[in-house]
Length: 219
Image (cartoon, rainbow, N blue to C red):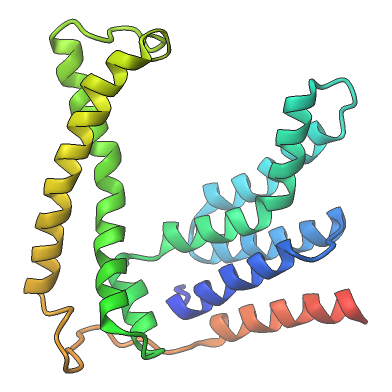
């Protein structure tokens, strides 16, 4: 079963709106159960477990009175942003860059915005990959062999890791932009698309679930 990218985007927007409301722990649990069910319908069992069990763990830690103040504040804040965090996680985990752009194009968003978004989604996974390549190169040369060396020598970390990372990512962004333009994402005419998507009962059920929460909240 697959959700349309637009319904996932609406779910993220709705989760962000609920963050600004006064939501109780029970109401937050209701929202997280819905997100977990969406993950199960997409076949993401691990994501569903993280959504529910992660919140339970964070919420229980935020109720412990003997925690250090910094840890209490962190867990308290994390328990409040867990709903939008998991909604965004669900969108990124189950939606490819092409599906997202295809869905946003149906809302007639500017192609310049879609070009930027397409490059960004292709760019983000490169950061982790480039960091691993740089760290492997440094270990080969006998630099930063231990994990905590990054904290003991921050000035060397900036020189040996961050600077090469920025240089490499700038080249990668240029390559990705050229590749995206070559594929015709920035053309003025509406491009041809090989994937057809439409709303199903799953997408309408997400809207009904969001509406049911608002009805229960403000009845």
